[in-house]
Length: 127
Image (cartoon, rainbow, N blue to C red; front, side):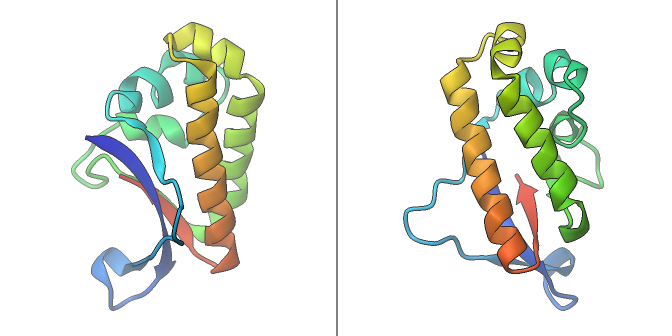
């Protein structure tokens, strides 16, 4: 299994109040292997850098089912977290053992999804 990111728009009639938007052709939506949930995004290294959104992927509850949902109003803060992690990728890599280029590739996919979400006034979900 792997973690993927999708864009959604609010829709009271859709499942969980959101309608997942189809990705444009050629879009890369991978944000890492399932192990990234705990070993990278939920790691102590990511938390030490100040990450608060992505570590939620490691905090699986009945309510979130292990998904990270970022509503439209929190996209800017989420994007800032991704910038912070990218700017400190060497430290994150050293703290987790994951290759810096692989981490940056995942963060690029996340930031592209955030751009698409902002364009449609939606949010993102990582599942």
